[in-house]
Image (cartoon, rainbow, N blue to C red; front, top):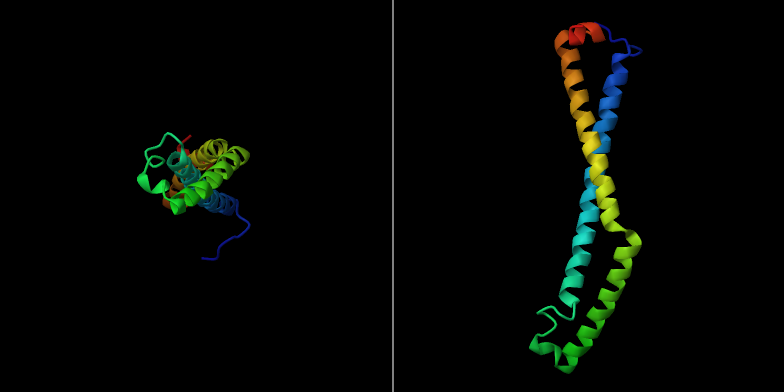
Length: 129
């Protein structure tokens, strides 16, 4: 049987494919932002003056003191980057977008399965209205 590529059902499949791709993209974006945020958080926790790492004995050594200065500079830049990039805001935005795409993906998946099982694309016949 020849396929009619102008049939409206292909718009549903195209939309499903696009939504699935957007779901994957936002999942990857969210993962990357979370890794960056976690890395900056760890840097800030380790280099905080009140942390247990700050009181270790080898920072009193001349080489250790020099390393501690560089770690302090890295921490200062980490604070600036964390504020400038607004990572927590982006994490929230990406999480909301990902959730929305996941819900839409599931709904389109169900619709595609109904189309396959009924062998037809007609809203009244698909949903029994």
